[in-house]
Length: 183
Image (cartoon, rainbow, N blue to C red; front, side, top):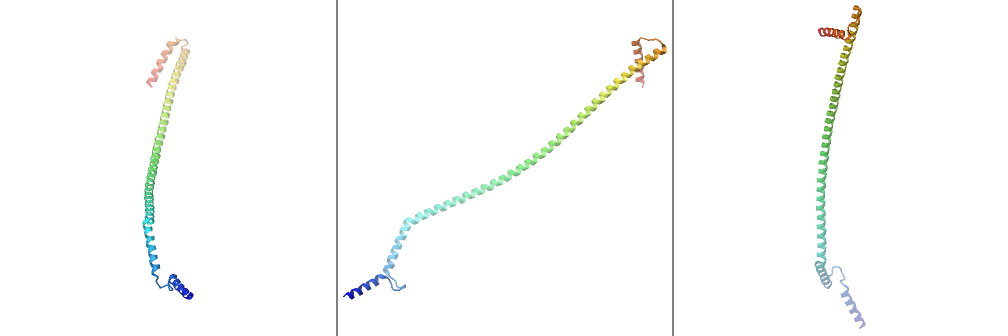
């Protein structure tokens, strides 16, 4: 009996130990494996997959927002770069215009200064000519007076008498003036 019991236990252990060959199928194990798999699949579908999908969709939306923000920033950067280039070109053009205007203004100022200097020089020359003419007239008048005095002195010696000085002077002055007009 012990032997039988022992053989029975070995057979029972062999039944529960699994298949002896890898190609032999144990339907109990097969059934419970599928049952656990389907329950686990249902639990994952019910609780885990929606959370995983939600997180994945949120991440996808965040990435889309970041891509659209990056595209907007890139577009803005390009427009700002173009605006800066346009402003730089405009500033250069304005600088060139200002330089051209400054050259024209400097040329006008130089011409005005030259013209002013020329007018001042002409005015100085005119004043000098007038002064020379006035001095010459004064010198001529002084020479005439001197000539009258010398003529009277010479005439007085010749005649050996002294005439009235004022009357004689007027007479000789008239004579010299008439000589100056005829010449």
